[in-house]
Image (tube, rainbow, N blue to C red):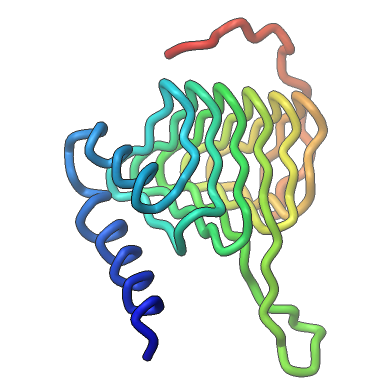
Length: 173
């Protein structure tokens, strides 16, 4: 075992099982920014009990909320825009296996959530997805394809349901 690997695994363990349960947001944000190397914008919040898969590979814009108990699988890059709301227990999964590959090879594909996106409670977004500006994923839905701007998506797998209002003026919560 290499010392660097041990350090990396310990850092993730401390992040997921100690720091993520500290009730003081500023302490959690300090660890995420300075130890885990996550880029987190001003006014953004990551709730208690969130789990991650590695350091770096996560960028969150200003005034964004990641609620409690979310899983951000940042083995590939996750980019979250400004004024995004991620409800409790959401999963953003960037890694899976290619079932058509002869050895079922692992693969990693990034996720992008643009500004004003809303992801409902216990929803899941798979790798390679782009949620365009203002789009919504309804609670308990599974998103496997990219969305259109301000579209509302629901179901297993999620399909287009309606169009969301495009008048969003909030900038701070």
